[in-house]
Amino acid sequence: MSDSSSSTKFKPVILDVLPDFPISGQRCAVRLQQRIDLLLLAIEALERGASERMLKTIQQLQFQEIIRNRIVLWRLRCTNPLRRSYTRETLTLIQAKALVIIASHQAKPLTVQIRQLLLAEQQMRQKGLPVNCHFLLAEYLDQFRAHFQSRMNPRRAKVSVYLTSNDELNKLALFLLKQLLFCTGTTGIQRFWISLFDGEVA
Image 1 (cartoon, helix red, strand yellow):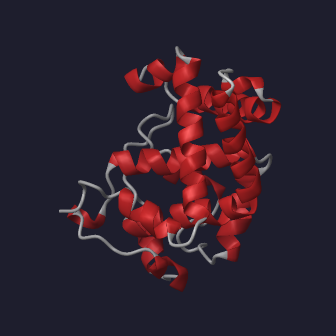
Image 2: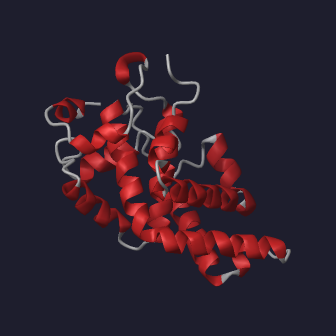
């Protein structure tokens, strides 16, 4: 991306918690970009004001040289090909690392909430009830659905499938909750990062 040069001026030490991979051109695959953006979307559905807190997290982690402002953050997230505003750009490894660390950092204070929602899902399944019968779970699913509908391109086949099936979109939202919880565990962020490159390493 045009902002990639700024990402090489200063490299916060925290980026080293995630290993580098010898991928072609040091640019990330669109599948990886999609998964990272959707993970951040789940955080936004969980917490009001999450987008603003991402900007504060960027400062706390000293990522300003990588993500200078909210416009750059928006452009990085628009590398998700499912988005209405897809830029056809690609993330650098450093940019991808920064976004994953931001997601993990923001998920940790939400760990109890995430566990409660996943427990509620399990209870609803055991009772043979729809997952949206649980008030808190329904609130998260409604928020995720609203964010997804407003930001993703309905002309994309994959998006269209989700938009025509609440059940499929709920499955995606719940899968992302599990991914967020995974990222909060010991070495979870490293294992999640490695999983993003399955089949992508040259």
